[in-house]
Amino acid sequence: MRTKKTLPLAGLLAAVALTVSACGADSGSDSPVTQVSAEAGSDKPGTVLDQPFEKPDLVLTDTHGKKYDLRAETKGKPTLIYFGYTHCPDVCPLTMNNLAVAKKAVEQNKQLTQAQKDSLRIVFVTTDPQRDTPAALGTWLKGIDPDVVGLTGDFSTIQAGARTLGISIEAPKKEKDGKIVSMHGSQVIAFSPKTDAGYVVYGEDTTVDDYTKDLPRIIEGEKP
Amino acid sequence: MNHRLIGRAAAITAAGVLLVGCGSAEGSSSSSSSDKPELKITGAYMPVPVSSDMAAGFFTVTNSGGADTLTSVTSSLAEHVTMHSTEDGAMREQKSFAVPADGALRLERGGNHLMFDMLAHKPKEGEKVSLRLHFATSGTITVDMPVKPATYAPKTGH
Image (cartoon, rainbow over all chains, first blue to last red; front, side):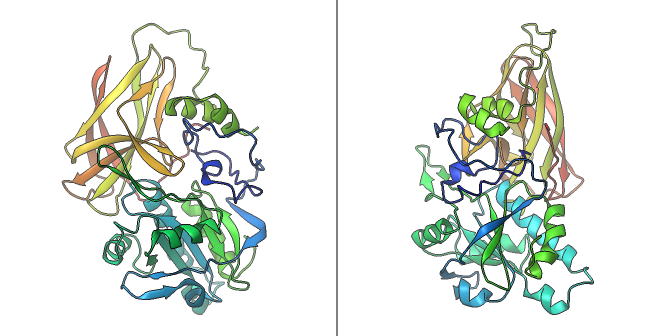
């Protein structure tokens, strides 16, 4: 839903329940109203954090089945991280396509050097590692942008990494009817090439135009 | 004012949250309310899916009459079309969606949506997907759902 971009700063470490953007998101939850008050009314799609996140110390497996050490691989590189899963018809492909299309648009940017453009890393970490094997992730990402780094591994490792970014995900659950319910995060976190810190948070209603506008700044490690 | 707070406090059903949370159709003081629902389907679209495994679909049902219920959806594109709400980042299948009297049912990005499983083929941008919406009272309404770019996300309701 197109609510105002009201990403709760104070409450980022609170459960995603409080940060999920949508109207229609919380039915049945009796979460108290005392939350997180978000600053409404900001026109900027991204929220620049006063206290940036440290990059999570995630060592996972990439789509080629190789070990991928997030901190080592993305050190000094502008990096966007999203947690989602491939059996997800709506928000996960939308978010990843937004990033992929914005990245393509940035290729036309004349202010940035080719080396700067090439340094951008987009990382998709699965929240459903059992179904999202390296091969399954690779196939799915090929349909979006083969340059995206797709990571899978042990769920508890992924969950702990997400938690350090204020993203709360639960393990996929099998419902009574055999359907598997997985969860995706609702934020994309941008990490600066200068500090390697996660300094901008984008909610799930950020559009491709928003990303296209902000990406050059993020590639330079500046505030969008 | 943060609309979400209102929504959270007040809403019981997903549809309720949608309406209250978005401050859109709820409370629209229509005087035309009779018992018979008067449905109009607008803004239908399917984003180009990543693969033929699954796709999503969105539309708005505006109702200028009495309450109705969307009980099922069928399409030639997929054997299974299911209705889902999104709660806390998790999709939940719903057996039906309420269409409130003098209100609207909105399926949109990040919220309620249709899920198409195991598509007959991967639809291309510009293609039209035929959809049959089955309502408890109004019967079946057929909609041609255009296929839009994967990044298409119209702003609605605000």
